[in-house]
Length: 276
Image (cartoon, rainbow, N blue to C red; front, side, top):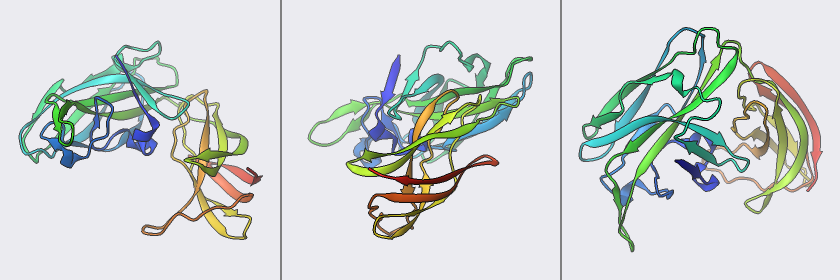
């Protein structure tokens, strides 16, 4: 079984989890559910280091916010990050799946109202495993369908996918900027850098750069928190850094950007002019 989450449900890559994304692929506010799926999971994702032949134990916390006992099914899945930044989960093992290395604590769980449960899982790469990245998802699925109240009253099943990245051995990303351009995002021109990953583990661009637009206005810009998987090239948007409660400034192109983008202990210089 494969399920694709459209980009509109992601909010950001780290929003692969949070309050329930419905099995019917509708985002439903908690107040609109009658019991059913009411779980909040922390941390939002795992990025860990694993050693061949050694078990690595991790713990995620499941908080049940429902007024009745919560019944959950827990299992692993493979996943794929699509070109439009949507995610496809798959129950079937992919060709390079590392899910056989993963042991989960239990497959079904009952949590009391308002309680939290610390759920354990282990990753054990076989001895001699070459440097690579193990990627999978832990899926937490509500066993009771929720009733969506409104003009239509229908049951919706909810689930959350917790993404796990485990770098085995000395696996690491190696990022480089291949091009810069301007694309329309939600109808607005946006500065984008195309980033290629030549390494064998995922990476993310970070840091801050300075931008000056056509009016002379200056902005501090930051790259989107997208994972760039090994062998992939992905478009990473540069957006103004905005303080809480303040509106997003309108950037008028052309936009001159200077500074350094960072990944891990490395940095990539950026000195370019973005023209629509």
